[in-house]
Structure formats: C-alpha cells, structure tokens
Amino acid sequence: MAMTILSNPLAIAAQRHLSQTEGRYNTSIVRMASGTRITQAADDPAGLAISDNMTSTIRSLEPIPSRRVVIGSRRVTRYSDA
Image (cartoon, rainbow, N blue to C red; front, side, top):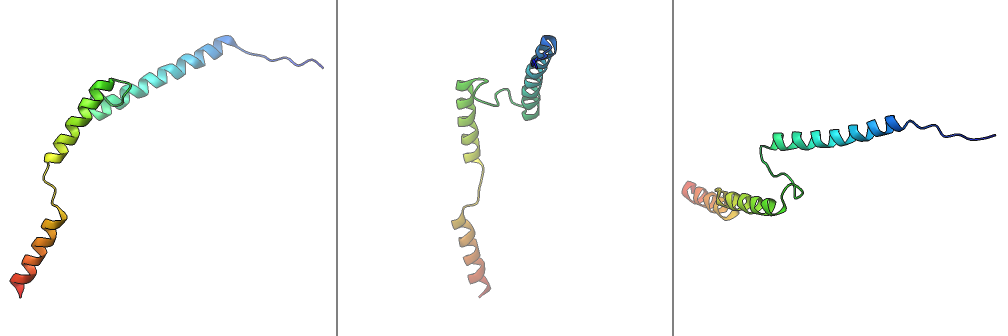
C-alpha cells in the first residue's frame, strides 16, 4: 500500500502570510495601546535604554512616603494624644 502526502502549496503560503500579517498587526496594537513609540528592545535598543532611564528618573522624583516618615508621624500622633 502506497502512502501519499497531499499538500497544497498555495494554502501553506497563505497561512504563512496570514501569520506574518497577524504578527505585524499585534505589534501595531501594542504600540498604539501603550502610547509610546518604543515598547521593546527590538524597536530601538538605544532608544529603549534612554526611555527606561528617563522613566526611572521621573519615578524617583515622585513623592513616595518612606517607612520612616510613616513611623515618625505615628509616634508624633501617639505622643500628642498622651
């Protein structure tokens, strides 16, 4: 009994092109949803490094109450009530 493998080269090519198009579409959606031009290192490696550095600098400037401030304010409240 002979075994035959049936293939459809046009269907295989269409599937490959569909996969590529889906990948490009998903990349575009991620970029639009994030609101930034650079979302991953593949977009622009140097730009991503600069963007990450700027983001960390901005976050470090935001006021974040430290644990010591919270403990200090609790002690002041406790001593003022006593």
